Amino acid sequence: MDVRSNPHVQKVQAKIRAICTPLCEEYRPFTWPVEQKGIDDWLLFEKLKREYLYRAA
Image (cartoon, rainbow, N blue to C red; front, side, top):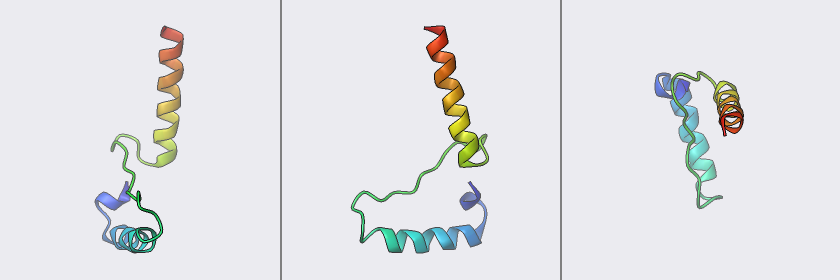
């Protein structure tokens, strides 16, 4: 989630938005909780959460 604090990443995200918006009506940036630094951390967290909930049911 470097886009929250890094102006270079914010600039690139703006360029991506400018390219994608005309091509896709439903374009929107994706964010995840700060606790999971990268998207890979968030995906792992969500997978483990689903597995835990499945076992608990």
